[in-house]
Structures are given as C-alpha cells and as structure tokens.
Image (cartoon, rainbow, N blue to C red; front, side):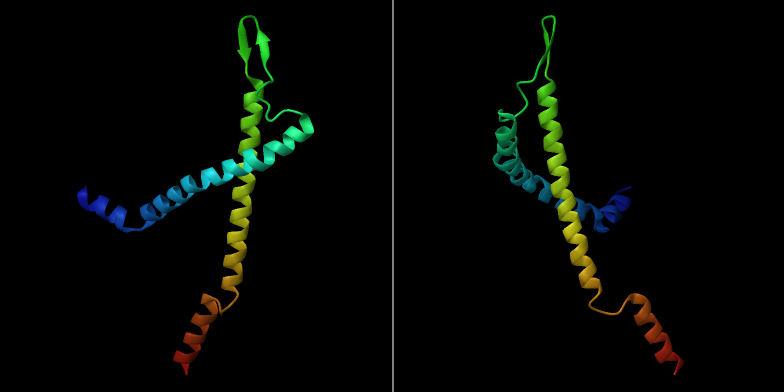
Length: 117
C-alpha cells in the first residue's frame, strides 16, 4: 500500500493538480477585484444599486434573500467567463506552438523512411 502511494505521488498528476489549485487560489482575489471594482459598479450605474443584495422576499417573519443569490450567480458567471477566456488563450497558445514543427506522425514517417533506406 505504501508503494502504491509512492507510485501515485511520483506520477506527477498530484503535483500538477496541487500547482493548479494554488494558482486558482491565488487567482481568486484578482477575479474578486475585477467583479467588485469593475463589473458591479457598471451594474450599479445601470440599476442604481451596487449589488442585488437588497432584493428580499418577505414571507411572514422570514426573509428570502433572492438578491444575494442573484449577486452570487453574477459572480459565478463572471468567474466562469474569465476562466473560459484563460483556457481559450491557453489553447490558442498551445495550437500555435504545435504548428511550429512537424507532427509526431510526420517525424515517425521520416524515421521509418530513413530506416527503410
């Protein structure tokens, strides 16, 4: 069992996941600042409120905080959009890096042809 754990850790997937998690945690304040410093002031200019937290449904003595849910949904969509843009840029970068040289199949075909000669 100990050897299995060592093999699991040594594969590198755990390390890459840890690095990804650390980067994501470091990225959270950037996205929060973007949302609170840019997106929500735009919404405040349009709607007249800095967020939707004031929207409340009263049922008897209870208050249902619909506005808080709306604010968090907007935050979620904004974070998702930023992550989408980052992944799109990453994929574009990798696609351009792959176009710089021959593909693996081309290289294997060249090796095969060289060995055949």
